[in-house]
Length: 557
Length: 82
Image (tube, rainbow over all chains, first blue to last red; front, top):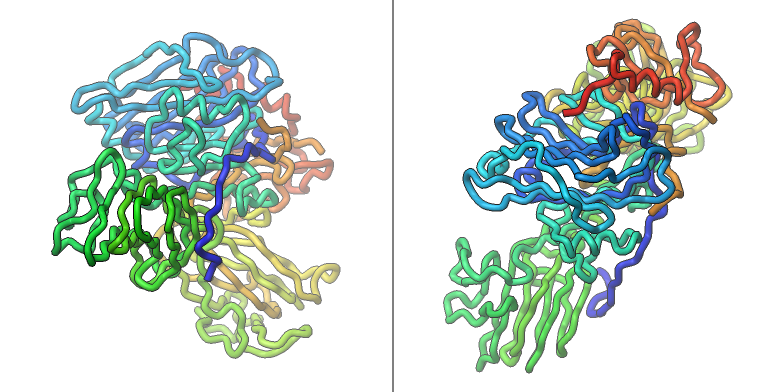
């Protein structure tokens, strides 16, 4: 249980400790996400760049081109130093704009430039989508090279390829020149940012925390991805894993701007319910706030089923109190905050089995609430739950089975100063033997692996089944199933416990959902302990071909 | 430490008996490499003075050298943007 009933203030802290340097040859960042629902509507992209661009070169900033070539998004620096923004949807019709003036001068940039790209569906049906480009917070003039993307087609944007940053994912391969230079604070919203919003994001050249609204920046709730390039929580510079720092507001219509259209509720407040629905609705929306007057005896609760049971949330809201007490709870018997005066309140609590955010007005309470913002603590990044049910081997080796019929064995015991470890002996007759454990893999998700190994002879490796996972850690070798690389006995580092770590990416959902421990075509003997596999939350991005960790630079906006 | 670039034939990576050891390269795996327009060549790189033995005899490029190859508009690698 967290400390409750405390009000805290939050502020926007300018910070950017790292950027990432891309070599222009083959470095890029794979997001592992298509952003289909985002790009099939109004959206905005923001980034800081410091390129080493020369006249005659093209540098790609972001892009994906799907297999049919019909749905693409691209942003790049042209041979003349201008910016081009392209959105092609559904059947190949596209919108394409070029800035009228050059944005970059030939040579290595000496300062950072903030870039904004915004797509706006301005109407319905055959109305054309408008593309806008911002430089250092100001919208710049563009020429429409093509203007054929209609609202109807834009809404059908759908790609089977993940978005790349610093390059273009062209139908699964990298075939164009990538950005040469540094890039930082890449952000994607599923809404249009207007002039004042982009100017606030630019913030006079100082990046701010985009998870927090500040001044004219009021789009934090629409943030879909937020890559801070090394200084985000859980960012792993050694392995080039950049965690999405987006922690979006999970409450719908928390600002009460929409007053009708409720589904399954008698209340007229969209996405909210009132537990006094069988009685006259006490809560009402007017002027963009939800208000309630004092009642003789009825307690009235405004609620929304937005939680996941057991997770921790930070809740923020504005309250205007005329009389009485208002209580905010993370469920029926969850954590609570009691409010007896007007103000802005913020508290953290764990969702109980009810899984509803409850705003409970005591009978005497009269007042209003607004700007309700709920975010899962740690929800946008970090590690998910442990997927290996018996990787500790404390009492047995249950859950691990020998796939083949060789003479290899796995047994539980003590060794090397540890109790509760697994001894694996790969017999000469069963060199291809493997011991399997069920795990459900998901396509394009990143997984973190860790295992303690005491190798006595032969080789050790961890695999998934063919095509189910792809090794991507710095130790991984080419073979598509090998996660940590094949460890061959080396007396200088083995004959002792050592911890191996690495990452792998889900190759498909379904298939053979297993993890394997094995040797590699030779007899072997090793002990293992603390075998752990955890999925990474959010949309973790992955550097590709970069020299990590040296590619992470302290040169920042 | 500088980075050294090497152009390989793609088959040298995809062959079942490939000797390319990605643990000695700056690249993660074959899926994430940059390939030439026709897919027949792949770009790999390593950092530092010690060249992996499986690259012995290969032509090596500095960063400036490989950029000339990659940006040659008449070459095997350059793709005109849309």
